[in-house]
Image (cartoon, rainbow, N blue to C red; front, side, top):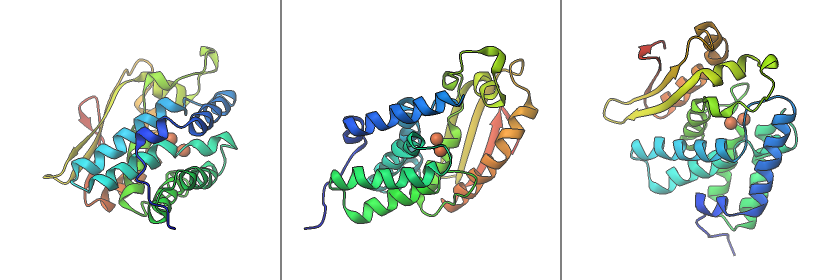
Length: 224
Ligand SMILES: [Fe+2]
Ligand SMILES: [Fe+2]
């Protein structure tokens, strides 16, 4: 009998195995000096991804699948940072199959997780495109978990300087904008461009897949 349960983000957030995966993924990221990649990042990316598709008037189910992929996208970091998009897709398969998710939904979620990194990802579906934009939009001071200020790297500085980030979707204008408010005394615009250029180009491709123009607005100025 085919799987047939319509899993929601709520189901994932109550699952002990997933909670353990996200804790372990973040512990490993913290150990190698990376920014927060745990439940906070997962929940935020899930909600932003869901909102992007909802605001573009996609079906409710498609928006929920984007939330599920967003929640699980970085779980592969519990194994290793490298190839975490691929290991994460396979981890998600096991969990979601156990939860009896329909196979045609499962494949969409796996494809979205497998394509979320700018090194090799592509917006292969609306769900993948939404997760890409949501993931790159999570830039915030609360992600910095390095306790030694002397060893702050460019990622720490860029996140620390970000007071606010917001994805504005306008279906009528066919536009998706990432709005950032940054403190220029903490991180320079040059830092932002160093980190953001490849990410923003990926967001642009993702927005195009969704039939939208992408823009990056920093402190009220459109920079892309
Ligand atoms: Fe990732
Ligand atoms: Fe991520």
